[in-house]
Amino acid sequence: MRRLRLTTAGESHGPGLHATLAGMPAGLRVDRAELDLQMRRRMHGYGRGHRMQIESDRVEIRAGVRGGETLGSPIGLWIENRDYANWRGVMGPEALDEKRAELRRLRAPRPGHADLAGGLKYLRRDLRDVLERASARETAARVAAGAFARMLLAAFGIEIGSGVRSLGPVGAGAPPPAWEDLTGMDDASPLRAIDPALEPAMIALVDEAMKSGDTLGGAVTVVAHHVPPGLGSHTHWDEKLDGRLARAVMSVPAVKAVEIGDALAASAGFGSAAHDPIALDPKGGFSRPSNHAGGLEGGVTNGEDVVVTAYKKPISTLRRGLPSVDLDTLEPRESQYERSDVTALPAAGVIAEAMVALVLADALLEKLGGDSMTELQAHWTATRALQAEWPGGRDSG
Ligand code: EPS
Image (cartoon, rainbow, N blue to C red; front, side):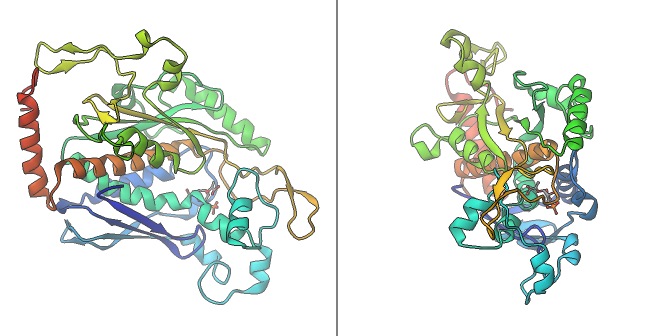
């Protein structure tokens, strides 16, 4: 990111998770209800493991906020791991309880997880040293930071939502949703399916995978609404917003492909069907009858909704195990089971929303400049007025 910096720290069963978000402007009102809502949304979803019943994921704001307003200084956030009570002596910074640590040792790496590659890289014999940080638990810290990005975007009318587009084969190939499809769906439904008609088949599939000790992936689509034109830039590869979004969303655990708009379908057809015609809107401005481009042309937002889909592989921790090798005996052995989820797709949507929010907030700060909300608002008004003067411009109101 260019204006914002986010670092997180924390192991899945360590004392807790920490996030530092630097680069936010001063004077943003902190919406505690929004922060709590996003944390709750991440915990939700059919197919999650037992861990979500242990945690509360309550965020403590430890720095950068005074009297409910940001100061422009780094925002420090802390989320306690309640489960740590069961891992003292095994996952804390103090001396280990060798017996208990040995019982928790991971020596048969899970194919698809970071265990083997991370062990080789950091030369750790206990693969728990890798899995603890590679765990998707870390995403709680990202969602907390992302909630602050959402608050900034909301101050400029930008909203973000998501839903599960497909789970395993159910719904695969469905077109990406429009904003109205997301606002019309039930965010509290078991799988947050965009098409509620698909939800029973999805639930049945999760039950089947649960029974057989298997896991499932799928696709989640994030839509950002009321995004102004002109975020990102066509001028340099590293400023193109589609690339910046793809990188951020690809970093969500288990995501192996990212699609902007309906790129997969477009890549299989002709250009005449792939692009969104440009017309003058009688009410002022331009109108686009379709949004195949997902709100991005040349790496710049064009004023249409930004549409990003994350394709998640099935979770790599299978209760029934997968072929692996025991690092102690060097004999073939089933990969070790570690408590996990059958699927975490509904949560992945919320996490991808947080990543999209952070990238859009970063691009908005870059576009508007300034250190305070007052400056940002003044620049926003000026930019909108200048865009309205441009040929075919619309009165921004
Ligand atoms: C997660 C917490 C983890 C897992 C999951 C996500 O808790 P635990 O390992 O104690 O059960 O439920 O992580 C994974 C599926 C993974 O492969 O890392 C969370 O807070 O989201």
